[in-house]
Length: 69
Image (cartoon, rainbow, N blue to C red):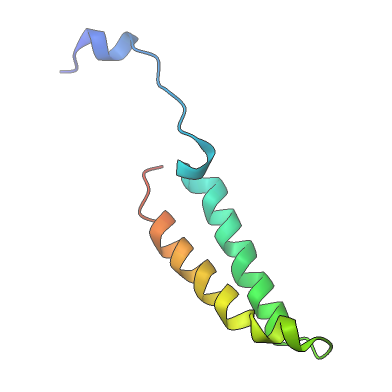
């Protein structure tokens, strides 16, 4: 059975960068941006950093997916 004190204590909201939902969305946007940068034919600078963006988004998604709901 749970402790009555724990039931009355208000839950504290986590900071934005520690919440799973918004950070997964940011990681997905990074992955999508890296994908688009990889396949665009106009700017070499975007193509140059596309793999870095893809890797950063993938690593961020892997880390954030371990956060509690």
